[in-house]
Length: 615
Image (cartoon, rainbow, N blue to C red; front, side, top):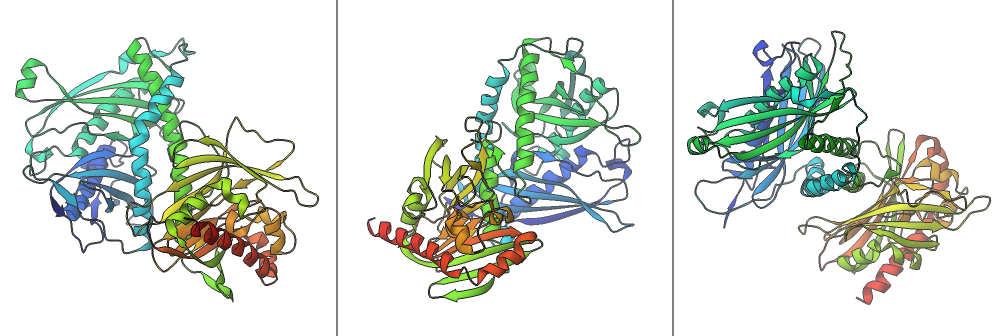
């Protein structure tokens, strides 16, 4: 098998700049979404080909959200970079910005991810070279690419589950709704050489542009106005089309949602022989979300629709299911803001897991830690960023990393090394990598005992340079409401990382609210149910274990990352994060609390080394 790729390059990295001319714009003088999709696909494809060294084709696109409009005379910049290469496919990250040449202001238009497949000449098999990671951002995107791939692979199952729920409702309130039959549009295009690459395969971006055109016409028939594309739902190309093919586009409105409308587009391809026999090849189906605005830029309300056929009912419910997934994805894919207790539902499980892993990954990768205390094999670090203070504790640990991963990822063992875990039981074993636990901690003077409902997401590395990961955050289960006997607390981010190198750290985060319930000493924090090291975040790297946990009121969850490797875990690090209001309080207690923190860390080390020796 031939290995392809630019081994010395840091992933395909390509930039395209375009001035927006009237020919690129719609009736409002704004850049046509179809034209932008063509540019995005072209840039991303070139990035993929730069890494692979061979021709590439578009396999799929994740959800695309358009946040800003670009107008005639402005400059569009599209940057694309290969985040991760798998065997024959690559994830490419795409960032689109618009610059006003008069004010020199720049805004983000869209951030998207696409998958491309290498297509060498002939029938030879290939295996792509891994992407060379240079910057911290490269490492982050490389790690999260695995999580995004899992979301893509599991999307269809999530959709089918939601469809089963939606199909239980057969009644429609929109008795006076508009029939969707009036919105059906069909259009045909002949694929010519300018629409294809040098191998004759139709550009994916060109197909997307044609889809946007026909979908826009469909939406306009409903709103009697000029619709604006706001987003494109995740989709994949089911088959190729080539020069000479006739592409037939069928578009129809599926459903409306107050200020938006979903239009479904089905693309079928015919060659000359198929054309005569009326034998179509289904190559793509996509779902586009439009809004419409008045002259003042205010969004208008869409009329409600009423499906009149069995297929219309199916599409009606499908649009509802996709909206739930789309909204969940939009909320969860961003880890810039740590959110408390997300609901655990069928529509968002994959995205909650993603945000869990992503939050820990970003926290563990933060630069700029300063050593504030050193004693024997334990170091205490602090990191200040805006109104957020983070605390990191490093511990030397000698135990096989895989064994440490197994021990730390099983939260039912937590009571053996963390006396602040009163009880811990599994509520749901969602998969081998995702479990939901119910945890209680003992009460402190004057307060009720705490309880937590937490999601523990564990990941094994796909290659030696990556860590094992165990991430923890609070979730909300309808089957486990708060009890009057306990004070329901939350963990925003926690975890362990374990790498197979000489470095190891455990990262944990804790929010200021958690400190409000603690005594004046850090010892109080630990004894009150917030074992800083354990309950915050734990990131363990084979030779390094990192604890990383932003905690809300109390840190009891730990996320564990570890590498599957025969090497030993030599270092564990813990991180804790607080807000500005508690920074002076925390700073005043750091010096006097070192022994308490170290005592907790020593218990964790003893547990790992004792159990590790039994392995």
